[in-house]
View (spheres, rainbow, N blue to C red):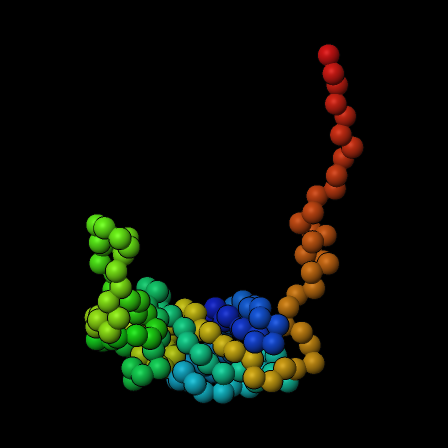
Length: 155
């Protein structure tokens, strides 16, 4: 019984939408790899096509496309997902000096979706007839309290 948080990025609008997927819909994602294209019917979104662009496991380690399998591995990386340039503190001049090309050992997840993955990142390739975003008018009406007239007394 798998459960995932799906983050769907729409490059046309520049916005992301989060959804939760459980049970049989989530089981359809197991075994898929980063870079694969999935149909929207798998997630109850007819007409859409998505590309799996990444994800993270229950401890927050990112998935990486060049690491095969489902488990975690420590890799030696120069750049890419999970890696940042190495900083060294300098007393005079710049506060930090960057050393490009320095290799770092990082723990990352494999490129295959399994039960311990909690978040999956998707990007929209083909849009369907219904919009991904929820209507904003209803959300604002629920969150906005009714305003009462203000009465101030001066003494």
